[in-house]
Image (tube, rainbow, N blue to C red; front, side, top):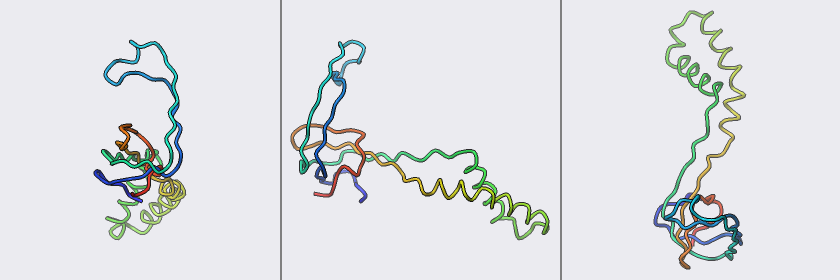
Length: 131
């Protein structure tokens, strides 16, 4: 499900937040280390404030595949048969890395202001369902 800014959502499962605690307006170095844990029950509703899409990192092989594939698609019909065959072989050799790159899912995180006042930031979008 794609989440949008302003959309009402509901927490899909119980969530436990644990880690160090610092005031939002102060630098972490200025506070003594405190550990805390907060549990939120499934079903708590809130509003999406921000949606961030974290793009997949392209390896050298993926970038090279895109470059060669574009060259083949745009100018392959004009190339001499030997050059075209060589370019097709190079593209074919990189198709496995391209397919693996496409199978990796795009990571989407959201910032949600819950009705109880809590703000959850950088939470995977899958943690919420439409309310």
